[in-house]
Image: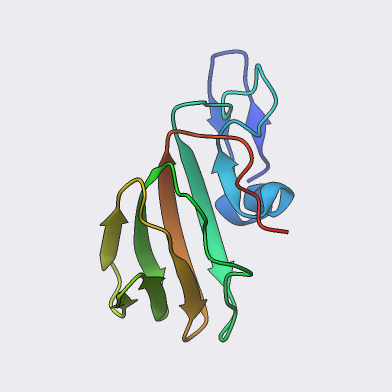
Length: 125
């Protein structure tokens, strides 16, 4: 199914190929204005992570709230003083503003992340 925006106000796409253009992010401030996927309120990511992949650096001064849901695999999130392992489909974790984090894919994993609001400037080099 190709990604397409119709004149009827719908965007129809497929997560994996669409996500490839913005490091996994399907919706957020980084999409062009006028694109139905452009939003300053929320970001949504389809994350496909090979076994052993780690976040390049911890977040610093987190200003968003986030929800991460495990679709498949085994995924560990690291928070100050606590790790959370998502091991079964549908396991999820929510963390608030001010809670920095990092992560590692303990197995090949697919996760869905929702963050709000959508704030520019959080890209990890």
